[in-house]
Image (tube, rainbow, N blue to C red):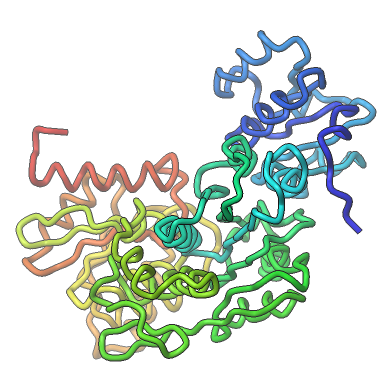
Length: 471
């Protein structure tokens, strides 16, 4: 049985921060605050000169800190605990050759939650974890908003932006019920030995197959969100989704199933009308799947229906997730840069009844574009602007499908290398009433730093259509 770490136990260890990114920074500062005399070894695959210079300042100012690259590290000190970043796979050389205990920012968060490190009594603190392949951020932020509007004390973090340990520093003693909503990625879940009190499981489809050897391994990582729950915990899921149903079965806790049901422009929960579809500020039927967990949890906590509906209606959609940018000459532009999976792009394309011009393609992760290609042809997408590298494969699949369905038109397929040219050419093709949609179905690495950079370049290029000299 897993034994949580305590701060007093960590005080006798050398703490190795493996991976000097956002979570590594959070882990160092939290632990240094609570353990002023402990020794740290900072380790990264990159040399210090290529890492954010804030780490150099730590090494210079903190006499109990040393640094090593992974390659130059010969041997870990005795009595060491490794706190690894979630981006490092189990095959990482240092993890392969050590028998020292390994933990993470997220696991330490759960470990410390019931200790005096939180300055909270555990009976007043409930954790809500959200996972799935896509929709995690929207689901998490909606849950947090609905509970906050209902008057609860709420903290939101995890993969959505704030490392879990950073949240603890904001806790204060309170008699009020406090809810901690965490978006949790597969990487953060993989080694967890603790599950949240309320686990929300959204749809899980193949992703990160350059990190996990098989989809089954990816699914196993996700399963930690329910595997360690207790009989007092709850799992919220849609039983119509096979993978969500499988993970829900692992939980010994109570089940709060939901299904996407509508009637006469109303979204229903357990046959009760909750909110008008036209009042939900999210594009696409697939987003109803992201709204329902917030409704299920709020109903579980006896929040009145009118308050739930008002909170959802006040929601501001997240950036880079079917984000409406602007309308130019009757053409609407949407930034869906975070859609890095074919399934996500399919949902985005299906969200519109208007003619669509699609910008797609990016980094290769060996995903299957067969169904996306079929949708592009059957839905009569007007044109597809294709970025390397996956743009080539998507183009082949589109042509292959159209060749066997000759009554359907082949969309224009245009290779592009820059976002500026893609947007300019898309605008030239578009007519009043069309939608130009950036929804790449692929990760962003290569032409762009990340999905944010890709989305921001799209938005800048779109705004240049209206104000050519402003940006």
